[in-house]
Image 1 (cartoon, one colour):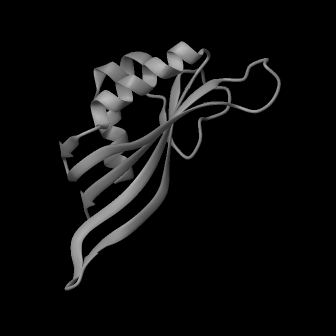
Image 2 (image 1 turned 90 degrees about the vertical axis):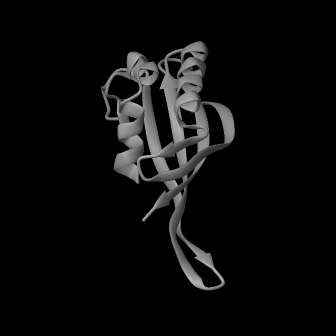
Length: 126
């Protein structure tokens, strides 16, 4: 799922125009420029029915949109939302936005990036 989600974002010109190939799981490499996306799998579980496993996985993925300004972080978050919310195909049965938050990294104002954090629920074939 992680590889497919990253490929989906990297295949979207609206996203790559803003971040290039800076779409990473876990962390943004130190010293790399912004804007960038950092993806984190928050939870991933097997779908179940009363008869047992249904063959689908359900995962919550947090996508953090980092940029040097609030406006740029918000623009990036809108591009990600447009690509993913409601998407189905390529192994995904559905990707849905579950929530969004505007944040600022801790520390002094010097060099602190802005962040918009998006939570997506994904349903995909295992």
